[in-house]
Length: 401
Image 1: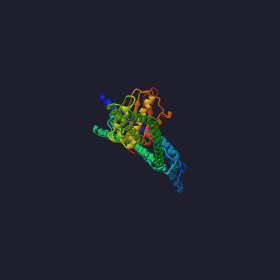
Image 2 (image 1 turned 90 degrees about the vertical axis):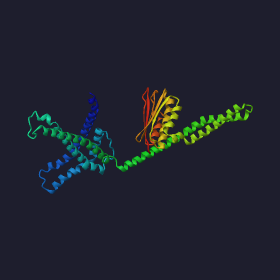
Image 3 (image 1 turned 180 degrees about the vertical axis):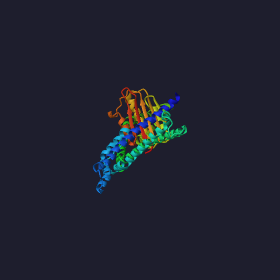
Image 4 (image 1 turned 60 degrees about the vertical axis):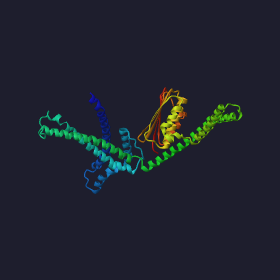
């Protein structure tokens, strides 16, 4: 029972892949048959006796001209085949010379390889099951003894394995060829990519500028004004209260000095808008400070063996900071959890809360800014927040820019 449990999933995956690749391969063979067999047969049906040179030329050129004329139709059919059977989305122009190379060379070659692969699999299946059909029919002339049947069985299993491998390899080869020849022109794709990067970088600049103005306004109108007022009052107390004991005067002096230092530090924060601990100690230390200052219990887990680019770390830091601020303001949650893990070249940030849910980036709750921050470094932003909770924010960022 344990052996079946162990090999069952593997057998299931092999069977699933074989079914998928089989459907994909047979569909490709059918498309190539219609694209080639039908045009090749038409001239010979028209000309019963291809005696003249013109008849021969037509018979040889029509099969080549037909795929060229039908390139847009064949391209649509092939793209739908890849999308429906493999889930590979291939987009591009309606017609190009690169597509013709696929329909004339790559597609027929892969289809012919598919025929060979399935032929090998069928022959291998027949040979591998020789013991099942040898004895009921009596001794076969070409199998003088059981040893020969055993060799044939081993060879059949090898052919089956080869056919299985070829079917999968041809599916992968077909996908690469179609992506290269039926997909977008590299120059156009590069141009589109540059445009997307330009837009994302512009969005990052706008988001950073808006964030800077908001923080400057909040700090200037709130915390900074209170600190200035406190420092002024302490200064007046120092100047006017001359008859205080030395201990009380020392306390006022110390409080006045700390208030001025706090104003200076706050000014540095407003100007820099980047925590120094993030540069010096990395995300773990910086996020620990955020979690400690959060107005609700926050569990933090950070596993970043190798630091990401400074810009990426800054985006991750501000994503966590703003997400926790939104939770405290809107979610009515009792606890939150932050997980930051680096996997390969991707930094994954997950912020979860047990609040009421229903968060929507379109309602201007600050989530749109988080998505914009993630997009500024080619990252992705996803939120799951059903009514009643929980809310899960997932951000994936490339570690290198």
